[in-house]
Length: 144
Image 1 (tube, rainbow, N blue to C red):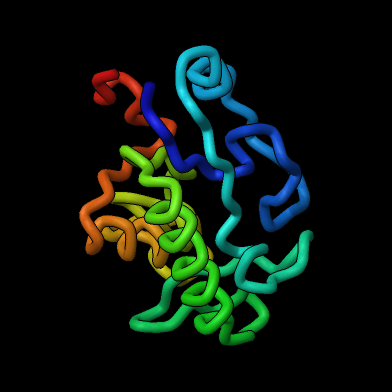
Image 2 (cartoon, rainbow, N blue to C red; image 1 turned 45 degrees about the vertical axis):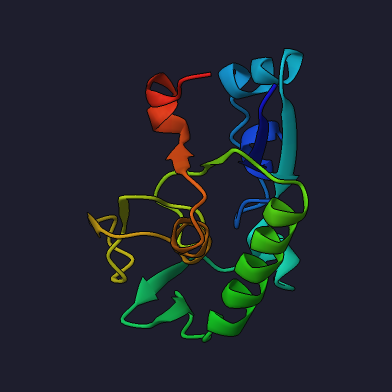
């Protein structure tokens, strides 16, 4: 039985920036045989829902109205890492392309829909601490 850190929006929680979810039935089905530990680093960092969309711009996270939300993103990432370590998670499944949770590909900071190679703040911190990260687009790569 694996312990899996999962983005709350993928579990059906309406915590995304626009106040909706992106429930993933394949991920929810993992709860039959594994422990799913839900997190929303953006909410855990103190951001409201709904909130202005944000993207990584250089070494900061900035909303589309120009608000620097870097500290909230870092705080939420630290809290997610703390929970991951406390619960000895085996790996994480996080929301693709998110400035918090994206892995491998994120929005480019222009709010134009363009994507670039990179990791969100939480995904990067988990990876730096040896916790494997997958997105919902990589479920076929997970070996349980």
